[in-house]
Length: 610
Image (cartoon, rainbow, N blue to C red; front, side, top):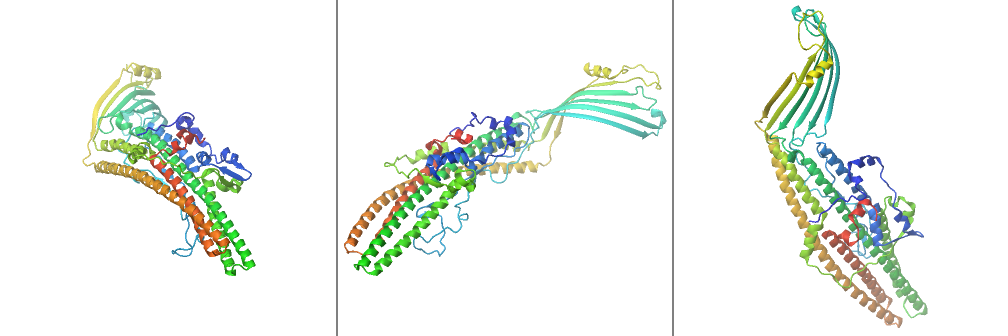
């Protein structure tokens, strides 16, 4: 499997917690300078390489996925603190279908489902037909129900706890001998501080420093006021449920895999966008060439009408021939109108994919795209064994790589579900030093004790551990039934098996896409070869019929027929070239090497600069 890494040359800060303040910056919706650099005299001169560069720099689907890196980083930061993961987006946006190509426009028939003559089909709702919309693909193989969280992960971020509290309390007394007063009045001030820290082993450490200063109106207490303090350390270490770094670091490992998944998903989005732009550009070039074909057909029809009219005026042809020739002129003009309409639709869709502002930019909206790259078919086809193509797809495709990482994440998360079925057995240890001091109560009986003094005496007692407390024990909780955890474990195991089945489906689908693209290329190549020959013979047939017409051995009716057949043959040739180029791009996508074939690096995609 090809190893994908997150490039860090210029993008390292964007994928680190130090870059989180940059999230306050608003998105940049300005087109890259390349857009306006390519516009000259109101025309946007566009090669396929320029189209791909504009897509890398401006396409909003790609820009949207750049934020996924920061989302994954925020999840990793959350996991390092001991939080649950919020997940990363798995949506991939495909490029819209577009207006289609010659002989295969994305249109509906307004008349009926029966066949109609050429030039009568129009697009009634491009959005409903998918010409404008962008289909969304969810590459998550875990389904819509998330995996259970399993045993809770401790919070790894330390916490400082502080408390300041003052209290005045008056309590009536039933026994005067207890304190020597009918009502006990107490003023108490507490100043406590602590530090709580959890560790990867599952241990919870609590360091507490507590201080209490209290004054009473009692006549029998030896010290009034007095100060009591304690400094204690309590450690709780799980021995079964919640034990071990492998368990408690599982979300960190999953978040790390999610960062890799994000890179692979961005790679997949880049592939989808590049493939979509190639397809849209190819259809645009084909439509552009088809408009030229339709213009040539109109010119030929107008010349035939002019020649026919001259012969009718001379009396060498019947007037009905001029009527037929005139009808052909308007029919070819209708075809040209439709071809130009499809070209304009495709142009608008292509501009929207290559810019951040779409047609909101007046200069871009008014510009006419002039394609500078023709549709080329190599003279000799490179034939590679299909098994080699299968192997290449399995190794290169990022959608398969991220699916494998999703399964690895499920296996990591399954440890938490298994651990949650164990009983709770915790080892608890505590060590604490205590101190007490205060001035003697002048109304109390005289006594000789070591507690006379102030707060300094208390601190000395704590430092020298004069009054220590030690404790160690085991706390056990064994649930009679643990059906929630058992059900979660059973479901997570089943979902893992489902994910493995989905991965196999994706692998089978990848092989099918490769095979389908190979078949499509073979068919398109054969169709192109046949279309070239058909166009040549139709051209020769038309020229022969025109020669017969010039000497009066034929009629306008037959010339019109041959002109229509030639126009159709030319459009078929253009469509066959377009089909071959798109099939080749589909194969490059199916094998996962379309970026390399067009000299696009993942680094350039991440930076948004070509």
